[in-house]
Image (cartoon, rainbow, N blue to C red):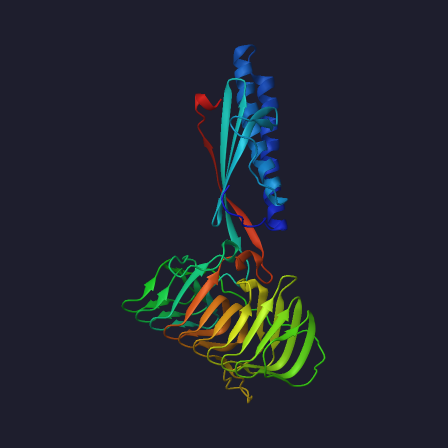
Amino acid sequence: MRGAHGTPGTERGSALLMTLVMMVGLAAMGASLLAMGSSQGKERRAWQDRVTAELGARAGIAEAWTRLESGEDPGLGSSQQREPLGGASGWVEADLGGSSLTLTATAVSGHAAERARVVFTQTSTSLFRWAAFGEEGLIVRSNARTDSFDSRLGTPDPDAPLWNGDVGSNADILVRQNGQVGGRAVSGPGGSVTQLDNSVIVGGVEQAPTPEELPPIEVPSIASQGDLTVSNHGNHWASGDRGFGHLELKNNSTLEIEGPATIVCNTFRLRSNARVEIDAEHGPVQIFVIGDFNLHSNAFLGSGRGRPADLEVNLVSDNVIDPDQEVDLDEVDFDSNTEVWGTVYAPNAVVEIDSNLELFGSLVARRVILDSNCQIHYDEALAEEGPNASVEWSLTSWLSAPVSWRER
């Protein structure tokens, strides 16, 4: 078995298990009917062995799925060490890699052997399954790039990136000259992808069948302690909830926040070279910002252990002009050379990532603009371990495969 990609969603997994159980039940009924209708002697015995072996292979698939749901290795036995499978004996092999799971069950009864091979496809329902997603549009400018890594496997290797840094939109996507999407570019149902000269889209172009819904942010009710300015090194906050008006870190100041923690503030600003590190050994940190959000050049915000799931940044900020309303537009700034490790969710804002900024995690916003030379490194672990993540499995195929005489 390769990889470790979590257990399937409960409702979907239960439905698939019921399907498998029904298949086993039908095979059992078939065995009874064949036993009643077959002729006596060797012919009857051969039929019974074939049906018993088929029933055993199906029972092996059902058992493997049950083990997967409970978090166990779905593999069962081996060709040298067979396990009981219904009325037969055999083994189940599991190959789990990427978003695909293949279960192969082999069952032997007498001189008969049957093999069932089932393929499941995994789909994440998480908002954070994109390097970047812009509900109303997304632009990748010259020399901007996306790629991916998996924090469960260690820190990113800049010389060997993974290529699941997908970008998406409910509308149009534009990839300008020399822009690079290290994954797929998925436009909305009525949208399109425009790719200019010398740009690269590694995973190809797709059109989503349905739009992505961006739910509103529900801000926790936490009493404000007033404004706070941090201006020196070595500051540490223990886990817990805190509310502020204006929260600002001055140039070169540092702050460590121990999770689990929830921070709510009206405005948030990190001045140049300021650092906020997240200690999420005991739980993640959530930051909710009602208005302005400013990260100045060379600032750092994120996980101290290199896990983007440790930090959630939720921006209620609205910096989009609405002709029907007169509002004081919020500022949302991600300045050059800033480094962020976490998820950023801004359903009401246009988020423009300045040149040379690096985001390790995922960005979902109303509109997204990736400026020249910025980089977004999507963490593939977020699809299963990020905020509100869930995974569904669907049955793709069920096939019979031959069994050699040496394996019987």
